[in-house]
Length: 248
Ligand code: PGA
Image (cartoon, rainbow, N blue to C red; front, side, top):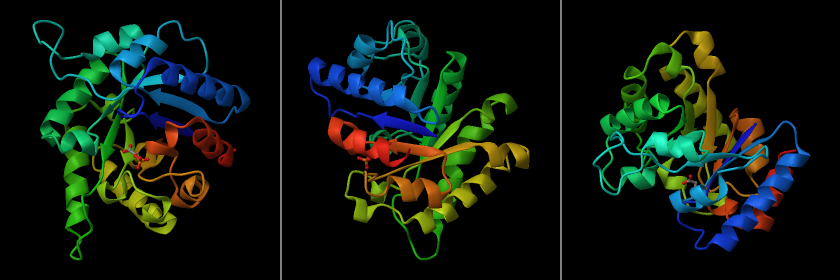
């Protein structure tokens, strides 16, 4: 099982960042079936990832679609890989809200693989309408990216299903495990348009959106996902510890 801790911009100083890494190391040392990936801000990634020898792995929260060169303010996959990131979150709804399109996210997926990073592709509908337009929205988000990738890379993408209406709220606002299981089936169906059915069935799919210690276990067990992308509940040591322990 894979737990990705998306620290977003919640962690404001180095001491807090170091403390959260120490917590993650402790938790990772105790569980064999759990893989922990931390996604700090760029500066904190540079602080924590180099020289990391623990089982904890690192993700960046985004990468540039440009290549290394004259691109002021951009951070490319090669730089992220060099400092120790092995994954990168792309297409997070908070970045889509700033104007990122599916085409741009597809470009970022290609850049990630070229730099040796595994992309964690966030997809999810903004709202649920009655005539199920949200399924078409989800299909477009997935298909644009998969169509841009080689067959080999398609099989290595990690999908994080994060319905936008469920992000940054409380456990009561998260999706129900039953509805999640249906969405996971739908996602695998879309993936099967881009790869052999067996490969689509084996794809890693995470859920994200108001995951807390109280609902993490049922979302994973009944929702049929391989893990979770956790925001708010990942930036407080006691809460994150309770969440991870609930999954053992
Ligand atoms: P949340 O965020 O757990 O705070 O809802 C999840 C995410 O946006 O990745």
